[in-house]
Length: 67
Image (cartoon, rainbow, N blue to C red; front, side, top):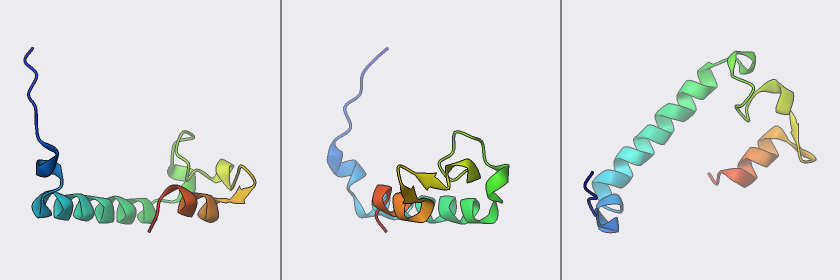
């Protein structure tokens, strides 16, 4: 197995950032289309996690993922 070094500048390029932004937008849209009860129990958006660590789910997720 050969290790290949990829410079950080590749990941920070405008093209890579645009691809990441589009992927994030698509993932959010996919999640919004699903009913919460269709999610696996390991998913933090599952209904059993409506209150996480004393926070409401949306407040907790906003602390986890900046918008």
